Amino acid sequence: MTVYNVTIKVEQSIAHDWQVWMLQTHLPMLMQTNCFVEAKLFRLLEQDDTDGPTFCAQYYAVSKEQYDEYIEKYAAQMRAESQKLWGDKFIAFRSLMEQKF
Image (cartoon, rainbow, N blue to C red; front, side):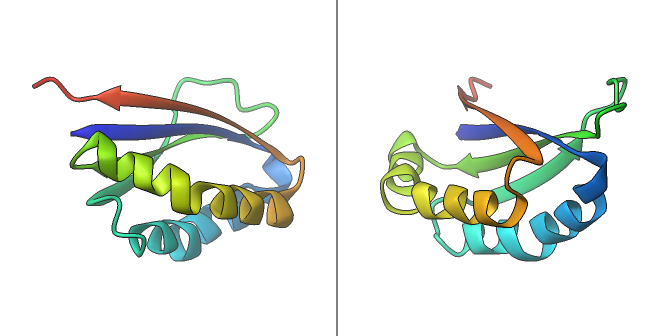
C-alpha cells in the first residue's frame, strides 16, 4: 500500500469552511480519479493552534503506479483549485509513504 500524506496548516478564519470543503468536495473529487482506494482526514492534536488547526489528509493507493497516475493526470488541477479557493490562508507539506506491514 502506498500512502500519500498531505499535512495542511489552515488559518483559523477558514478552518470550518475548509473542513466542509475537504469532506464534501475535495475528498470525493479525489476518489473519483480512481487512483486511491481510501481517503481519510485527521486533525492533529497536541499542536499549537494559535494560528489555526493542522490536518493530515491521507490517500491510500494500492500501488505506487496508481499514485504516479494521480500526480501525472490530476495533482496540478487539484492543487490549483485549492489555491484558487483558499489562496495564502493555508500551507501544505506532502510526503509519500510505503506501508510495510
